[in-house]
Image (cartoon, rainbow, N blue to C red; front, side, top):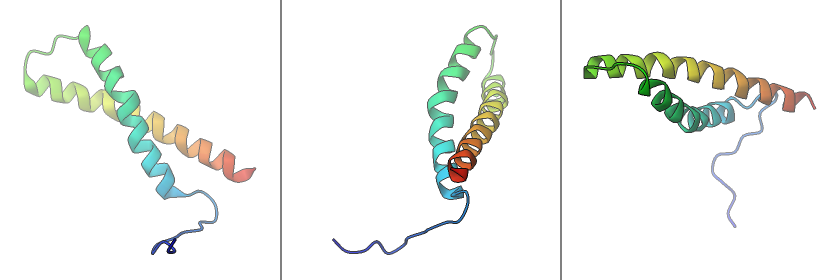
Length: 78
């Protein structure tokens, strides 16, 4: 098996891993949350729908990002 062209051995938190996991978890967790919260909200136009999804998605993203970063820091300390 040939050696991969690009390898990394980061010291401390692997920010690439944090970004990838944050991206995936934000979609997996955020889509159902946006769908559930939008069920009880009157969204009459596409502009209202997009604005709602961005506002809720931003909150989900920051919560997930901080959680993933905290997890990576905790695992790095061990």
